[in-house]
Image 1: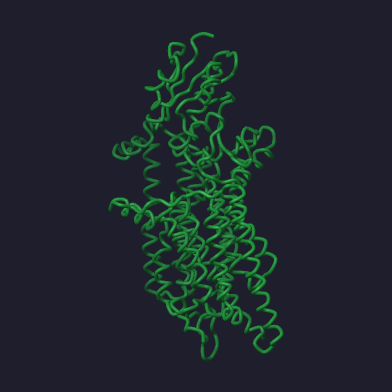
Image 2 (image 1 turned 180 degrees about the vertical axis):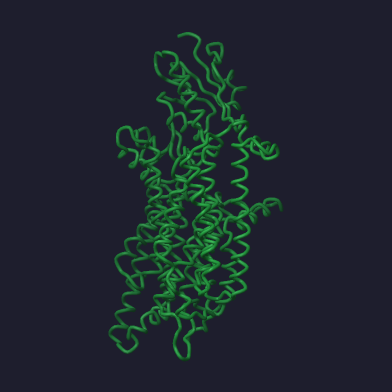
Length: 587
């Protein structure tokens, strides 16, 4: 017997969100952050450096790294994708732009997988709303579409998504493969080849992207859900007449068993692949011992997953009869299991933000099932809170930007100077107009939302997703020159490249000492110098570049009587990242 459903939704409550509006929403979110920017420190630039090394044939495709040292983020497939994009870059084109195109495609694929994954979860009979005595309840496909719309908007509204989803790093690839896994496990009862193909890509992609443990755990969860899901599979097709056709029902169960066997084999293949390529790494950290560490983790979880975590709690409460039973229904069990795996990794993992990010598709799916259970007062509270918060945030961004260009008031200028250290970004008309149109779009969205009186279960997520998108667009348009100045190594790389080319050299070799991978990547990208860490090879080099922190120990490594300091080049917003450039006195 099915547990009673808390969803009470009429057909009028599942009217379609205009497709052009949803597509425009997603397009703006994807493009903002991938345009007009330089490689940012640290993960963004470091990952791009590994891709450059692969594309130039300077490192092994099976062990990416920089100048003989392995990559700090153990992954293969994301670096391969970036390297192939660089190799396909036309002459005179920007390699970094080509890489951004590929990773923007991964983000688009993520959004598609999340929408369809939530759609097929909502198609489950146990997820359907209450049937009315005289009809008029939401039709299953329309209900599933409305839930998927709301879930995708909830995903876009997550505060912790914006930056990592626009970096060319393994984290975005892992997010994409996590979303593909959710889609495959949700859709395998309705489709055959597409879930099989994308599910294989999802688990194998996670394995090759530095998350083999999560791939195995996801596979085991899918096996568990399938093995205990005979009742769910029988209920899935009752409306199609399977319960009156024993042969069709038996065929359906054989199909479930084939899926189960295939998922077992796929999980074993992922484990063997990770073992054969030596991808296993111990990434579990000790539990925090001090309250301040616990506090930081709690804060990170709360803001990173806002606003979906309150909705998840509401979902678990309202649908409690569907997951507290011995065999919870798949529309709750599957995203809840995926979310718990990623959340646990966020507490004990080496990179909590990245692991937690992989749970966002599952979190959005769980949050979506809170929407049909909201009361009108809850929806109104979300709307008003979102309206006030993001309007104030956008107003603050505009106020500070105007103050920066006008030169007043003094209080605002002092705050800006603390971050930019006297840098005044140039006025850029295209970026200004983009920020202006985004703000006008927010005003239109608020007006449309307040005047749209007919109910729709996705309406509560319109303003949260729109507010996050507005803030992100303003940051990546009006404030992009300032962010590039604060977060990129373009100035450092070009200054050192100019310095290295200012004098004729015998070897073209540049020794480096104490530089991290982000700094090395900047030099590799912005200059044509041949870099080396090898001390023996450094004896033949005409230039030496050292990090400011390593300068005191240089006399213990090199004969500094042979070197003359030429310049100290640092990032204007962080003097602690200065690089000392030495030239050999004589050859």
